[in-house]
Length: 109
Length: 227
Image (cartoon, rainbow over all chains, first blue to last red; front, top):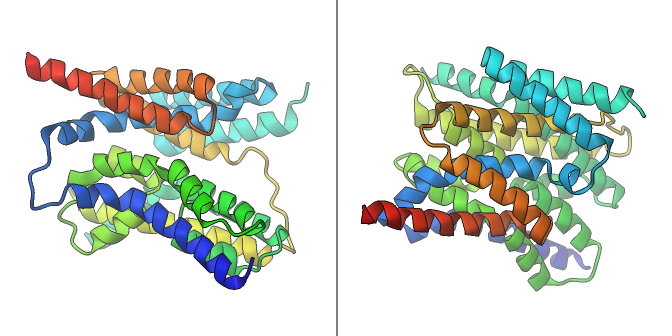
């Protein structure tokens, strides 16, 4: 690949990615009333996306069951447990990540 | 007020700082090992700003020039942003010129934080969302830069640190679940994605889940309107 071809490749990836982020803002501009269903999506889609992203993070551990799956479940349970107990975001993330790192690096079977 | 807002935004993005600098550096090192100098990972991080696509493009740069494949793969991987944008239409509006950058920098993590965070009354919400976008962008680009520059000298090895992202999304999901009145969307999203992952595999399950979720909500919307 020549330098020009490399630049074009990167530019296509950049413009395409930008399009995925900007297009809805152009399709539903500020000065026109947004369709009611689109507003409805704005209210009910994001909670679903948060669920989708959780599964996304676990995708490899779900499809290939191994010890990382177990550590992922344990560390996830610790994260959620501490979060429901203390309701402190930083603490929950820190505890969950630390336990995952420790389990992955020091517990072998 | 401005500095308070910045401080609040910084606190909320600390987990992302850990995750992005680590993953960004991993990407930079990967680029270095693939034979590219530091300008490649830095500029790609700054212009594309989408982690998984950047890894894919790194591979494509090593092969034969194929612009359609670049377009197709980028669109498939990043089409989820369309749904984030629809969700943020009203929240991002009225932010003036900053809105352009906020839309440009709308990645998974920034979207999730900006959607979920309840800001106290002494914090400007729109300003907060702008700072979160800016900080997350800065973390990722500096991570990629560092990895690209130091790629030959160091290898970062802390297996498991990437769990910080999983933990972040788990906590945001939990917050949503605690605060919402109806659990319909959260539970449907979770179960639906779990099933589609097995049915269509890792390449397609995100897009398929999002489209199915929109269809489900369309049906639900009709029922509610009909009432």
